Amino acid sequence: MNRNIVKLFFVVIAVLLSFFTFLSTRYEYSTMSGISVLLSLFFAIPIIMHSKMNIIKNKKLKLIYIIIMYVLYFVSFLIVLSLALDMVINQTNIFLKFDNLKEKFSNLLFMTTSWLILFYSFTGFEEKESKTNFVLNIIVMVVIILVHLNYFINPNLQTIISETTIGEKALYITQNYIYFGIMYTLLLINKLVNLT
Image (cartoon, rainbow, N blue to C red; front, side, top):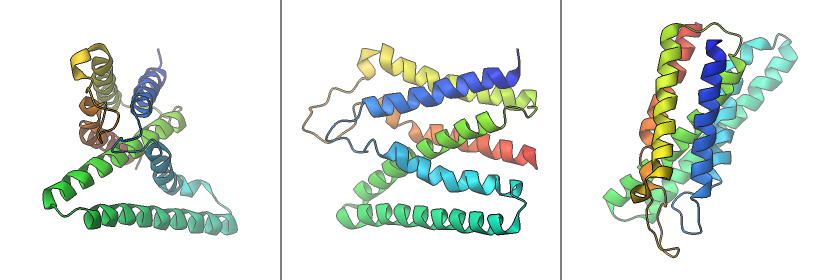
């Protein structure tokens, strides 16, 4: 069986399971809104555009493309900056500030890299992939799938939370977003290094 088909299968399962779990555990007082899935897609779009910039050969179209890409980068930067400033200004305790920053940005890192992994798995479908890259991708995807499945199977991992308190129903999952995001980032860097 083709490695790219197997890899794409695992990537799609891991990403869809992650998004489903995140969205299904949102409630009125969740620390992160479900809108962060769409916001992270917005962050991923200029990165995708940047990686595909060399495809455009027409100079006028390329100029328009570059302008749009940099506008999206700038807007993304402003959104991240406003999120950071909002968290820093609204909290007086330095440890709470750090926890809030870590929670928000680990979530956005994981969601953004999820979109990027999904996109590059579809666009790189025809490219030949080394055995090492294939194995690394499968290991990461299986780990993420198993962590999510463990959350659904093991009732002890599902946080019991009052519907009127601020928190996360899937704390077991969301506390791992920083590690998932780092693993996805390393896979993306490995892919980009191997393309050059």
